[in-house]
Length: 212
Length: 212
Image (cartoon, rainbow over the protein chains, first blue to last red):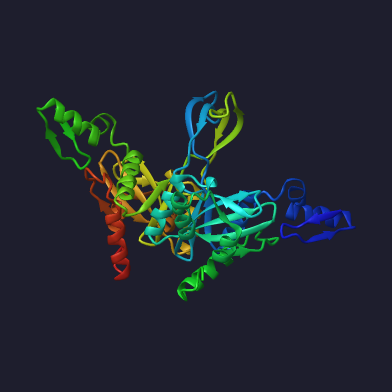
């Protein structure tokens, strides 16, 4: 059986037991059949960082408007009617070495550009608010067809987003992201080692090199 | 009509229109009839801080396990079965002048102590994790019968919580909170001016005076 790694590598296993262990570790079926589940990979990475006391970053729960709740027993309230609400912030935030971290993770099947429609106006506004409070704010962009992941400072995204009105462009090119972002090579654990990109970003920012 | 302010002040209005406007602004019925809705007051304070670009702090959505969703129309998915999940973090977090802020807000009707049962073990663990990452982590404690609100550094709460095993004490005394916390006097806007306590805490911490 060939196990496809998110970074395009592949390995063959003969030993059934070893294969099962590996499957459990890296969930190859997910990658092979319908691409890497990006969100799941990030959640696992967050857990990796949390367990090793490297950072405390959580995904926010999906916002839901609860309308009707049944209480058949006190211990088991059942929500019988509820609706999805639009989130007013990004999905992920937390703390890393005293630094406020805030990010959104998005994926596209496109191969040459990342569509702006993936981001809602209120998320752009939230990023602007966080940047103004000196938060470390970024997006993780996953090109599922290319199996490539990028860290991009929200400042870049926000400025490109606002340029839409003038240029009419509905997306950021991969070239722009390659030039202005930091590529993250997926590993087995953590699956998306994004804190490495954060470190790199902070160092480059200190030396005034980011995006140059 | 007498409008009771959360800090115990009261004002009489003769002009019906003015009274209605005031009611809308400060919702006196809430205070008079069943005590101040503490969570609502904090959410409004967060909005106040957000609109004035003083801080970006949001309440996390209630975590819900969604089991069944109907899609009568694409635009109106209805959640038909879902369950409340236990939160793995505190309710509030965000960024204030580059500083990661994380807190939990709790209230009690007790007059002389604050019961530990208001805090779940996973919340205590989350506070410990955040403190370790140099996050600014605290609790806002509301004594509804006394109409008094306190800021308490999570370090104090966590150490008191762990002392339970040795002392068997099931709560923190008001005296302990008065000595180790910072009292927050509610105002009309923001209703719970907790950033003032945060500033005071940061200054005292710098001068090594907090809790002394």
